[in-house]
Length: 607
Image (tube, rainbow, N blue to C red; front, side, top):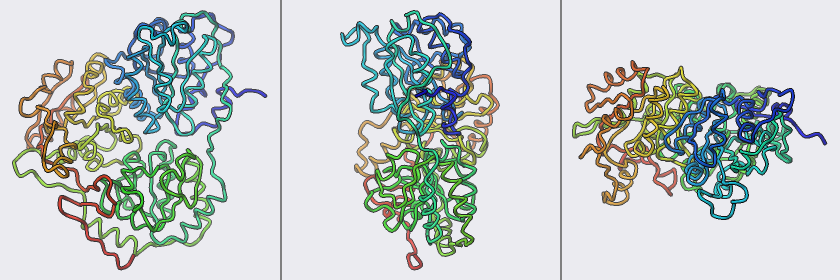
C-alpha cells in the first residue's frame, strides 16, 4: 500500500486551517545535514514564517542552523510567553503557530500554553529539546518526560528516535495540528538526534494509519436535521468556536437568514456572526445576555454547530434546555453526546455541515416565521439590555473604558483578553463583527494569556491594530514579554483594567463569602506597586495613565497614534464593579440574575 505524502493528504485538510504540508517545496536530491539542519529545513519547507522560543542546552544544536534560516525566530522572555504567542499567532492567522523550548524546565514551562491550546482547539506545534537518548530515564540534568507530561493535553506527541525521521515527524505534526479538530502537537527531540548526521529530503511520506477526520456529514442525518428545523417552533442556532475554525461564517449567516432562526454565539465564537445582526441574541452562559440564556432554556430545538455544551454555557446540566431536541454537529465525534444527548448526531466539518443544511432547508419551500418566539425574545432584549451602573464613589467604570476602546478602535482591530472580569466585559461591551477579531483563553481560563497572545497576533497580522484588554492580576504574570515587543518592533496596545484586585475572585467573595476578601487585594491601587507606567517605560514601552472619565477618549486616541512602540495604559478603575448578568456556578440557567438581587421576569403564556 502506498503511504500518503503531504500533498496527497492536503486535500483532506479543513479549508479554514493551514494544511501546512500543502505548501511544501520538493528537494531534488538528498542534502547532507545534521538532525538540527533537517529540523530547520523542514520548518522552511512547511512554510513556517515565525517561531517563538528560548534556547538552552538540549535544543541548542537547532539554534545554530536557525541562525541562517529564513524562519524568523522571536526570542521571548519566558517559555509560557512563547506558547501563548504561538497560540495568538494561530488564532489571528489560521496558520499553525510554532514555539520552541529546551528540555526540563524549558519544556515544562510550555505545559500551560499547550493545555490552553488544547482546550480551545488551537493548532500549534511545540518543539522541545530532550537530553541525549542514552541519558533518558537516568534523571539527567534538565531531563523531564515532557512526552508523558503532555500526553493528556496534546492532540498527539512524538519522541523522535533518529535524525532520519525528523522531516516525516514534522510534516505529520503540522498535518495533525491543522486538520480535523485543530490542536497542539508536541515534538520532543533528543540532543544527540539533533547532532547526528543525516540527509534531508522532501517531501516525506506520512505514516498516519487510521487518521481520517470526517469532513462531510452523512446525508441521512442532514435530512433529519432539516426535518426537525421545519417542525420546530422555538429553534436556536447555538454556535461554537468550531464554526470559526472551519471558516464557516459566511455559510452561518446564509443559514440564519434563510431560516430566520435566532443565533447565540459562545465566548469562543464571538465574531462568527455579526453582533449587529438583528438575529443575534448575544452570548449565552454564565455571563451571557438574558435573551440568549432564555432562548436556550425555552428552545424546542438546539441546532448546535461546533460547540461542546460547556458547563459555563449549560449551567446545571440536568436543567439545561429541558424541552429541546438537539441537533449536534461537530468534527470531533467524541464531543457528540459527551455532555448532552444528541437526537441527531452529525459528524463533519462545520463548513460542509452548514452548506448541506442550507441545501436541505432550501428544498423545503415552507419557511417558519417564529412570530411568537421572536416576540418573546425581542421583549427580553428591550427589558434586559446589557448595561452597567456608574460608580457612586466617582471612580472610573471599567465597562465604560472597554466600551470606548471598542468604539474608537473599531471592528477591524483584533482584541485579546486576559481572564476574569475584564474578559467578560470585553466580550460584552466590544462589538465583534468579523471572525478572528476576538482572542481569549476560554477553556482553560489562563491568567497571563493576553500580553504574549497579543504579541503573536500582531506578528501574524502586522497591519492590524491589536489591543489587549488585561487585568492588573493577569498583566503581572507575563508582562515581561513587552520587552520582547519593544526590541522586536511589535507595537501592541495593552489596556490594563487596574482595579487593584483579583476582580472576579473578589466578585465571588462579595456574593458568596460575605465580603471576606481573603488574599485578593494586589496593591496596585493603594501602594501603586508596581507602578504600571514606570514598569512600561522600564520595558521599553510608552506608559500612559487614565483615572478620569473625561480623559478616556483622549488617552485612547493618544495610544492609537503611537505605532512605533508598544503602549501600556493604566486605566485605574473602581474595585467594586461586577459582571452582570450572572448564572452562579452550579445553578440552573433559570436562576440567571440580571443584576444584584434582580432576577428577570419571563412571560410564559405563549411558550
